Image 1 (spheres, rainbow, N blue to C red):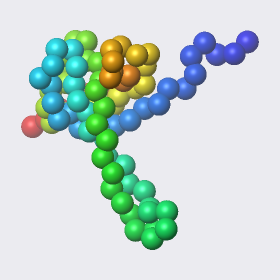
Image 2: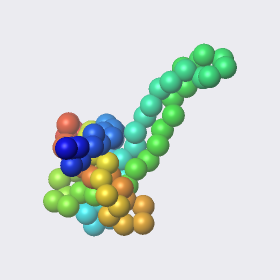
Image 3: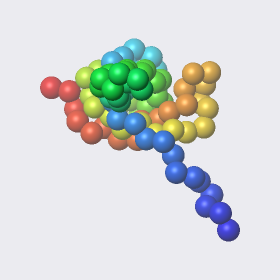
Image 4: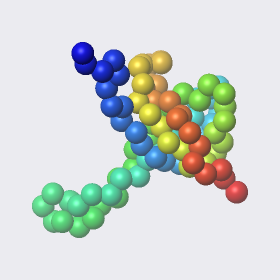
Length: 86
């Protein structure tokens, strides 16, 4: 019998906005070599993540997990706060 839930994607990033209700914007940085020139390129991507209990604040490092669509742009939720902002 197959597993009910498959392995979900997980990302770590920095909360850059918490102005919405129950939503935070998380900026995730990724480094990978350029396909032709092999120079390491840093790319950033922003995800809207669901934060039901409003536990994350600006500057916190969080782990987000992929989930079912919650709204038009929200496909992620805050799994845990790794480090609180100073």
